Image 1: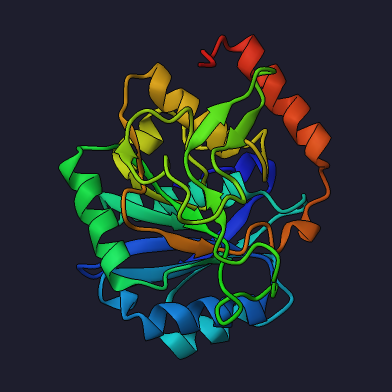
Image 2: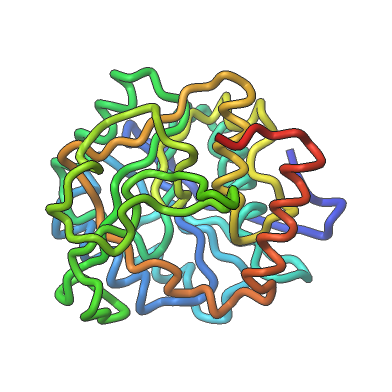
Amino acid sequence: MNIYSDLGVRYSSSINLDDRIPALIPTHNATGLLKNSFRIMIKSKCLNLIYPIIIDDRSSENIKDLCDEYNFGYIRIDHDSEFNYSINMNIGAQLLYELGATTALFLNNDCYLHSLNSLNEFICRHGLYQSKLSGIKLVYPPLRFSFKKNIKNQNKIQFGGGYFNRSSVPDHKYKKRPLFTSGHNIDTEDTAFLTGACNLVELDDFIKIGMYDIRLPHAYQDVLLSLKYKKNNLKIYYIGKDIYFYHDESTTRSNDTLSEHESYSNYKRIVQNENFCIV
């Protein structure tokens, strides 16, 4: 099914699924960042559990040859608008579902799978809790992993659960707090939303509720997705008791043309017009 053809979106794919969980990783260029991410997941042996599939959004760099070099899956997307994370991931999810996949890992290109134990536990607990959408604790990486070389925040929490502040603005719990800070070391359904940087997703439910909202091309689409799951009584889970991954956070956001203010205004309008519950 060629979704978004009415929007002028064209895509092709080279995917060979096996018994590992497929991992969708969107990118626009960023070859160096991808190589850093690949290096980390190879060294940690996380490829024992996942099959990376790179979603290439109109890159001028040769991402296809890079995927062939590592024997990773590849999806090429072409269109005439700006980078749209939501369209990319929706196309990837639809393709996987049509190929018979049931569960997928959604992963940002600057999120690093440094621990096979964390990945195995994340997958196991996602199933144990019968979660439909799971997120994991994220931590700013130490310099040996970081592509951005962010000295100030290394080994501090980037995402320890989601909440809405007094103005109903979504925010990350414990952000930039030391990793040893108490409170985030839990596995719980009690999270307002999950960040989209690293999610385990049951594809059937993801597709049934309408996937990501493409009116939110690169920000707040993850918050709205969590609200849609809650509205449809589908379980979401934050898994952070004793496992985490590293996240450089927004390393390639300079590719985005829509401002943070415009993105939030669009998100807020959708939430109000469609009567989502903010708690």
